[in-house]
Amino acid sequence: MILNEGGNVFKTPDGQDATQRINQADVEPTLKWLEKITGLDHVNFMLGSTGIKPTSGDLDVAVDKEKVNKDALVGKLKAWKDSNAPKDDDRSWIAKSGVSVHFKTPIKGDAKNGFVQTDLMFGDPKFMKFALRGAADSEFKGQHRMIMIASVAKAQGYKWSPTNGLVDRITNEPVTKDPNEVAKVLLGDGASADDMRSVETINAKIKTDPNYENLVKDAKDYFDKEGLKLP
Image 1 (cartoon, rainbow, N blue to C red):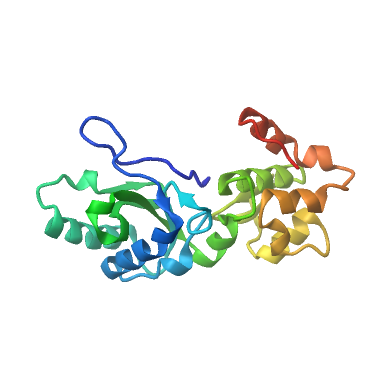
Image 2 (tube, rainbow, N blue to C red):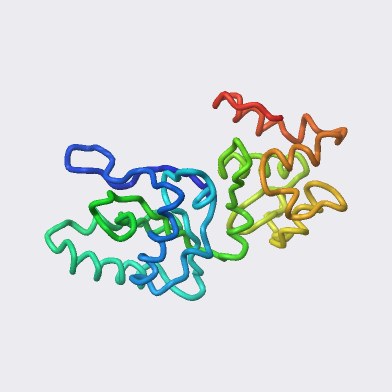
């Protein structure tokens, strides 16, 4: 699972995007409004660049899969939709894909402000906040950080999963989901989770490693295609 920021699920009848980018100042009010429908805490479980960057293409939030399931959440969203837009097709407001439930969310709870797509992503929220985090001072997106971690992990015989954490590449046995332990395994003794907060901090930590070029090979290949360069 890679965090694809800005993927538009909802379309208008003529095929145009039914949702828009949201300003940073509107993120919290919008999520607080959504909390009244879902009964869940969304403000404290924002993922990626949600609420960090000046604007966001969508709202990515973690949902604890041990406390609520997709069908229950969809039921709450559908109840609101049936009360407020009874003639609309459910699919124009709510969709499911992979680990996520998507909701066409009125910005600040008012359709006059337009709509933003909210991606409610099921998993272990505490781990997801580390695995899918973004950084305000980074030129890279959350998905680029994921690719960087995966590149460093692959070069050392591991796989990186935002769901399962660090996994042995050959046996598929889990190694660790503890953020600080992940940092030590991938970046070396003395590294901590904070060293993994962005592409830039990861790069700085491994820059002097004799195996540096191999560690970043996959990441560099991917970034080159997008016109991005490592610091």
